[in-house]
Amino acid sequence: MRVVIAEDSVLLREGLTRLLTDRGHDVVAGVGDAEALIKTVAELAAEDALPDVVVADVRMPPTHTDEGVRAAVRLRREHPGIGVLVLSQYVEEQYATELLAGSSTGVGYLLKDRVADVREFLDAVVRVARGGTALDPEVVAQLLGRSRKQDVLAGLTPREREVLGLMAEGRTNSAVAKQLVVSDGAVEKHVSNIFMKLGLSPSDGDHRRVLAVLTYLRS
Image 1 (tube, one colour):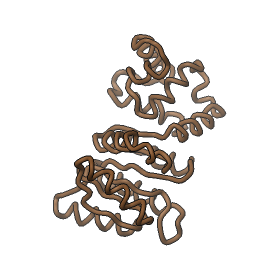
Image 2: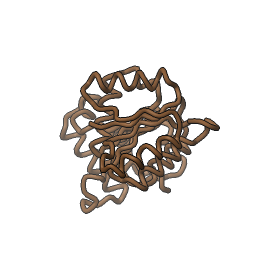
Image 3: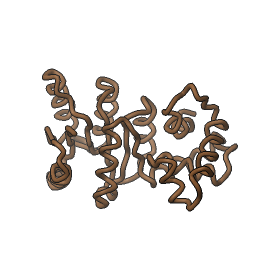
Image 4: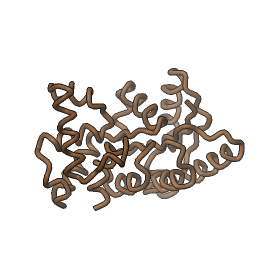
């Protein structure tokens, strides 16, 4: 897997690089600001050597506000084949919503504390690189909490909301079943009910899992 890392903290950038290279991945570039990230990806594109995934901090120089997420949104628009995983110190609903409002594939939003769980972080990077979704449980909790006020999920039962939250973290049906200590069949039934209540038809294909989470973000 080819990775580009955008993080202004040299210590964290080097740490992420070490984690990924130790697992056999190729960190093709490490940069410290959003402008350098855009430039680096453009240069790689010109060489027909785009990375599989970009890992970027939400807040980067010069203002340390939203440069990182703005760059991530731009990269998703200009290079939809690249997975984008953003890291944030805190849950920032506006940035998470903006990042998730576009294509429902190859996107992730994790809190930096999650990097401490090496296996979970690496699984998230690989999942996003392969076109999947990786959302931090804290991000999901806050967004789902806000969505309840908007009545988008009013038709879901508490258990269905719980299943939806675990789906949003990128868990498979089997993983959800294990977490909730129920059968795979029970989870499949809950997932089917969620799709039906949110108006997601079979024609939406495999992305229904992600669309179920994005429905309330777009309301």
